[in-house]
Amino acid sequence: MKHKIEILTTPSCGNCMVVEKMLDDMNISYDLIDITKKSEYLEKYPIFMALGIVIDEKLEFTGIPKKHELEEKLR
Image 1 (cartoon, helix red, strand yellow):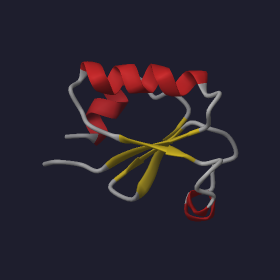
Image 2 (image 1 turned 45 degrees about the vertical axis):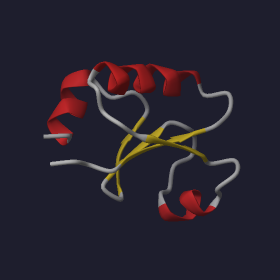
Image 3 (image 1 turned 30 degrees about the vertical axis):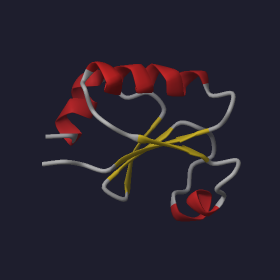
């Protein structure tokens, strides 16, 4: 099953790069959403700081997940 993955990020988000690399290593495609430019995402997904990971329109993680937790959500 192909999932729609969005990483909610800011220009200075160092943790976001960790998750991007994790997804790249898993060969999973994703979209980066800069929440400083798309504030409507903050209304839809109540995060207080970047990093948010949205999978299929549902906020699944805030912060860096463990790789096995991310893999489990993507099965």
